[in-house]
Figure 1 (cartoon, one colour):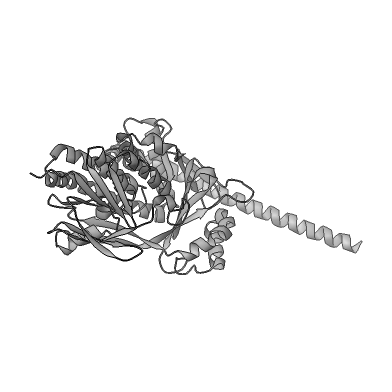
Figure 2: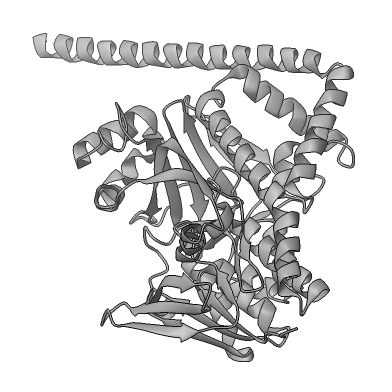
Length: 472
């Protein structure tokens, strides 16, 4: 049996870069073809460079190749989430008081750069500005196109990894050969990534050790901190219709939108308007590829075979977990690479399909339910149960984000926990919590009305005083 020792990776994004390190540590010679410029020449802060959320799975994969301490130094810890309510109240929910759960916000380009800075330690060669345009599986040849000269060349390769993202050319080549069928599922919403700078007075707008959420029925914003107090915000809206990306087409309409829906961010509109208006909205998409490999020659990784929406922050974590699992499968089966690839798909496909589904469910929660007293009450009660019984009860969010259980097992365990909680009378606690939330909201509304009356009274008294003074 042929023992391949040279691997060609298409795509030098985060998944491709980490896999290169995993394979090089196993004495494979690795070459990577990447259509972009050298990562060192790309800006850290831009609309194309969003923040990533590293959590348990991604961290475990980095630890396995002794890189977590390197990455941790350029990441910002997030110990909980801040929900910005319509009333202006800020609700802080820690990820885990007892367990000490933390997520880490890191700029995409900084993370990619830090990974590639490790290449010099290994037999890894990266060739930038070369786009893979096709793969011939019969002759085992890839076709490349230089991004400047547009000259095309061919190269015979031993083994190919398609880590080239949601629009993967390697996957499309598998589809053309009728090896793989791919289903795309699109939401009718999309997103834009906006960099929110620190104001000129150097006042940091919001706490930087938390994930920030502004959620409305027809809009949502997620904020993640960068070093120095800057924020990268992901603005999610319907693609068309009222208050959609299609309808917000000027600085004035953007300002009006923020003043109506996100008043505490409206002061940032002048700084973000050009960025927002100049970039196209990206639709949310999930990818379900039914076959991830071809014989002993080719395998897909990350978004190329299982892209998911952003609503659990698991895209990068799932891709990094792919690297660890694929490397383990190769260790177990080498030199039988077809067996390694088959095992990889068997271990990962069911889980990533489950992840894509729960991410879509999470989107519905964020879009439709975060203003619902019942949904908030259920979230609070389950959070309290998790604090009271940290070794027994875990929310789905905790199991997905803060554990390394397979995604399918995480969902099963959460469903079992909820059934047990209901048998123990948790619905009564949820009802009490609903009443408390409704009473609190009513109190806030009354207080707001009282404050408005006070302002009217003071304004009226001032006008009366001025009028009286003019007469005398």
